[in-house]
Image 1 (tube, rainbow, N blue to C red):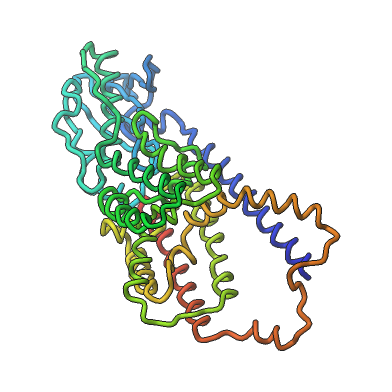
Image 2: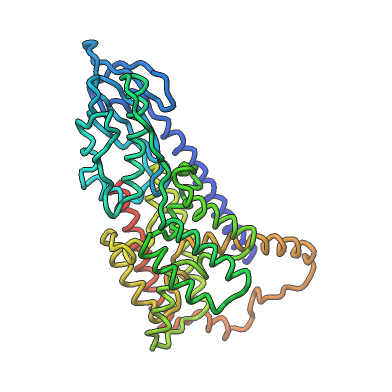
Length: 436
């Protein structure tokens, strides 16, 4: 029976990985857009184009009657979740006619804030030679709007200098400030403290993480970050160097060191849950370890589903279903708000409730941290094939089996809350798709 169970587990894992590979191939194919189709999103009247020289794809445009429509340029820059691409239509007079966001990997809620603010319309009739002077970023979505602004600047500088005979200077496109530096400093502090086993510093590092990573920068790691890694949607390093420290940097440290320091030393939401539990816990909530382990397995399903949707819809931001933005920035869809309230309240009864039962980031980092041990265990198992099993594989004690089958009231509560939160996660993913 156990062999059959292991076989089906391996089969399901294999099918899940195969489906992700197929979705990744599909995403790469979707990204190969028809050039005229992209141009027509910014200039519907264009029916003919001629490619021009430059660092970014740019084109001279004509309508059906052969009249000049100006120029179109496709440029990219780095947003919060990875590269974003825009097409800018510039009239022969040197005025910007339209700016259309073609591809992005931003968190849907923050992108919606940018679009709803009319930010893209702010470029209309703006002279190319002014190089977007006077166009301000959107408060509360600074990195996303700054990324769009940078992409527009790249495009119009190329058109202005190469086609219109202007001499537009290019500014720095590096997107970081003192807030990014504080995040990097906090990461270094956590690494040094963990390496030197300075456990007394841990509460203070966690408090700083709540203030800096949580409220100041809202830069918590999300599944959307790792989904971007899978699909290859990286921001440009010189524009978003801090992203490479936060995402692949911490992942590499976790693999090499074999320790998940982010969750234990840096996660601001984990720190909040610890604070809530140790400050307010007055309930003896004790579901069985077996039930806690079983309900936590649903994290793999949610992780797989979220990444699949991100790949199919070509937007890694869709995969971000965590409650971090709601708690630290007050932004989220309805399902995220309900989920956040439930998680925070239930953290009174169970230590790190979100971390233990739902967090995809912790699941990924803990798995990578165990890679070394898994390899060692596999090697050891090969040498012990003929040894006696060390665990009970088929209990003959009927009372023991009956005991495992019985669920306590605490077990039932945990199962019910887990089903509810996972249903809310599904709703978050659906709302993310709708908002893309």
